[in-house]
Length: 237
Image (cartoon, rainbow, N blue to C red; front, side, top):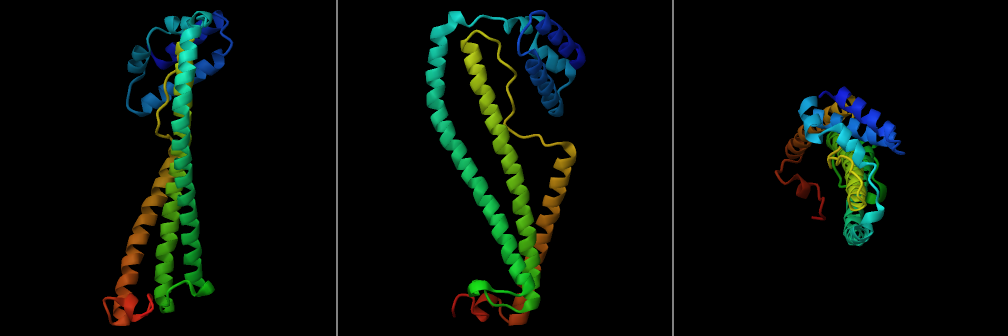
C-alpha cells in the first residue's frame, strides 16, 4: 500500500466513524510517513509496519470509561516522570542560553579587536595586524557557535514535541484509545535551511582554524618567541 492509499483509506474511515480530531490524526500520519521516508524507508514498508488503516482508525473510537484505573495509574506515573523531564529540559535550555551568550560575547570581542578598542583594558595587548587576524578567527567562531545554538534549539524543540507525544500516547493507551505515531527526537530542518546551515558551519570552522593558526604563527614571528603571550605580557609578566 502506498502513502496516498494509506492516508486516503484512513481519512475515509475516520470521517465515516465521525472521529472529532480526524484532521489532526491524518496530519500526524502524513508527518510520520515523511519522517520515515527521509530515513530511507519505502512507502510500502511504512504502511505495512503501521498496519491496516481500517483497524487503526477504528481504535480511535474506543471508549475510555472502562479504563479509569489504568488512566489514574498512568497519570501518577507520568507525574513523577514529568518532574525529572522538567529538570532535564531546564538544563538543556540553560545550556542553550550559554551557547547563545558565548556566540554573542565572542562576536563583541571580535568587533573590539577589529576596531582597535579595548574597553576596561580587558583584552590582551597585541599589534593591530595580529588583532585583525584574531578578530576574523573569533568572528568565525561566533558564527559557528550561533549555528550550533540554532541546531541545539531545534533539537530541544523536537525533544519536547517527542516527549509530549509520548505523554499523550501513554494517556491514550491507558484510556483505550489508539496512540499516534511516535515522534523522532532529532529535528529535521527543511532541506534548504539545513544545507545552508551546514555550509555556514563548515566555512566558519575552516576560517576559524586557518585564521587562528595564522594568528599564532604570525604572533611567534613578530614577537620573536614561541610563547608570544609572555613576550607581550598577557598574564602580567
